[in-house]
Length: 279
Image (cartoon, rainbow, N blue to C red):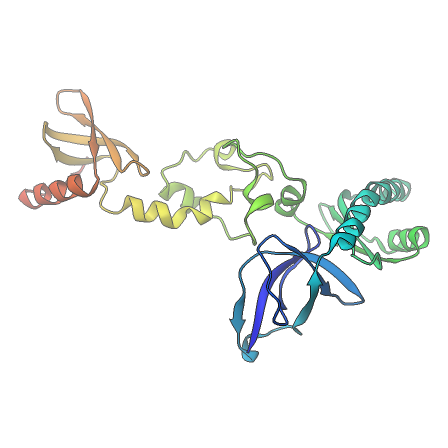
């Protein structure tokens, strides 16, 4: 058995489990960890967990120490150096007329490697570019092609809700998002309304889906006829968060019907008195 924590390498690297070695760490704390060659840094994402030997898929690496003031100074120096290497890489891309868009770059903690992230419509042969960059910076170079969702995560920004992007703040991984989730949350199926900055369906449709399904339990469907205290009416719209529906009565007027615990009980009793039918 091992005590481990999830750590995100660098600012946008892979999330992996690392052995704590008996040390205690706080969420969001920076740590120095074992890397492929030398040392790297990362940020703790969660509380300690205990896993079995059989659950370990990759070689389990260790956290060396909490990042000290000198380590943090080194990390900041590396971040400031990124602008310079980005400019050089962009220049080399233009010179070689490669069909790729440079998104970001980052150093490993000990500067033994520089990672460049880019997007492209298809496969790109960047072998000569790697040679150019290795010659310019005298270190290992790694180029990684990423998708549009990863691009949004790296660059950050604000979503339609006015808050910072979920992917750039608290989401650890990208979950599958489907149009069915939007339908079940009673959202307009307009791409401009339910797409994020990346152009894909918003991530919140996925992790909020279960909550909406729970809130929709016991609510009638749009178009369904229900009995209210003012007579029969047709359900025109639903508000899952308020557990409320808008009903058009037979005289053409509208009313709000709340389906909180008390109202739901009343609805269930009235439902037993007669059949519900779709319009």
